[in-house]
Amino acid sequence: MRQGSLALFLYSDALRGAELRDAAQRAEALGYEALWYVEALHYESFACGAHLLDATERIQVGAGIANIYARDAMAMVQGARSLHEFSGGRFILGLGVSHDALVREARGHAYARPLTAMREYLDRMDQARGLLPGEDPPTVLAALGPRMVELAGERARGILPANCPPEHTERARKALGPDAWISTMQHCVLCEDPERARAIARTAIAFYVAAPNYYKNWFRYGFDESDLEGGGSERLVDALVAWGSLEQIRARIDQHFAAGATQVAVNSIRCAEDGGPLVPRVHGHEVPYACLPDWELHAALMGA
Image (tube, rainbow, N blue to C red):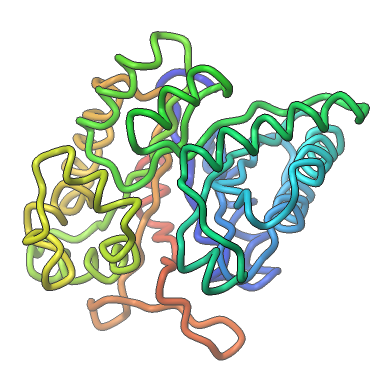
């Protein structure tokens, strides 16, 4: 991972197959170093990763993240090594514990304490490696809290945090030391009208405002339960979502780099044609946790 590089963070669930190929090719053509994609309620992580890798030639493709509850540890090692081999080393494995609603309610699994679950899963992956041939891709953890960051420093190449202010990047860098990768996801809205920009931002972060893994982490940075009301207080929205002019968005990205980020993964949030929030629809269903990319912003960030 090149220091000071930009990646494109893609909510893959919001796009059909041909649209995913187009998005990956556009990201590569613009010069983004990496393309991160999600695993939630539509595409399976390794199948989606294979599709994106097949559509491209040079760009790194990262699972952001592969849910540890979606497959056993041996299957995770097999899938990651397969994509590493098939892509000529362009795949990055991001691992995460996901959320109670996506594990217990959607999958029917018991949702364990995140740190314990991740540590035990990494142990089982190590056991599986002893039985399997192949080479591992770089692995990062979706680490928010300090103990998960510490675990990543011991067992992974770095971290892929999301919905975090630059202060989180700074603390993580101090904890991880100078060599670990930090690719932090940053929401961005190219809109200079404060009321409209914050309305769009609240739509984009609505899932996270209700997710304990995230809001408990925000409380470490001076926020409290009052900041969760009404879809997020202005100060919370402004801390998580960079909005305004291109220069203002660049300034937030630069804050993460100054705080120690290796890479910033930009999640651009496209507005509806009427200027309001846009909720994607796929196969006739709303995907309320997802965003569609704003290609105008992505091109501008890359100087295209």
